[in-house]
Length: 105
Image (cartoon, rainbow, N blue to C red; front, side):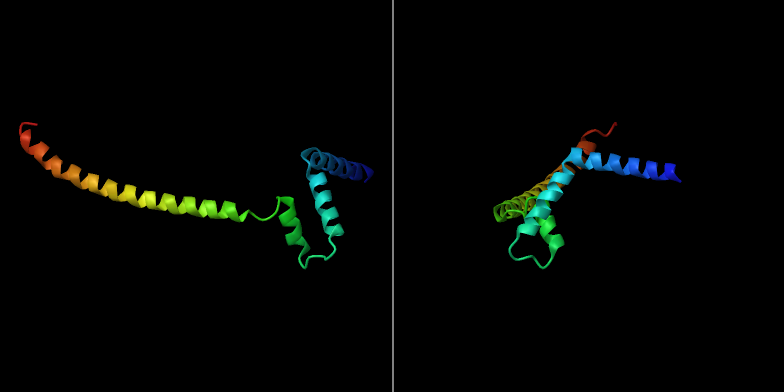
């Protein structure tokens, strides 16, 4: 029985070292200290931790910039789709003439 406990302790210690090496322990500690030092505790501690673990909510300017980029790209896709359709139609108008000019093939 004691060997089972040693294996479990060994795995637990290995995992703890992994978390420390990856910086997870420091990040969690900092967030928990920030939560502890908050004068008014948030109603949802988990949301507080999520926001503070990844650096807070995305910047409004970043969101607006991405929305503008998406809008521009959608317009570009529409233009390219229309151009593609037009070019396909033009190509089809030339294909039957190419067949008529080469009756032996």
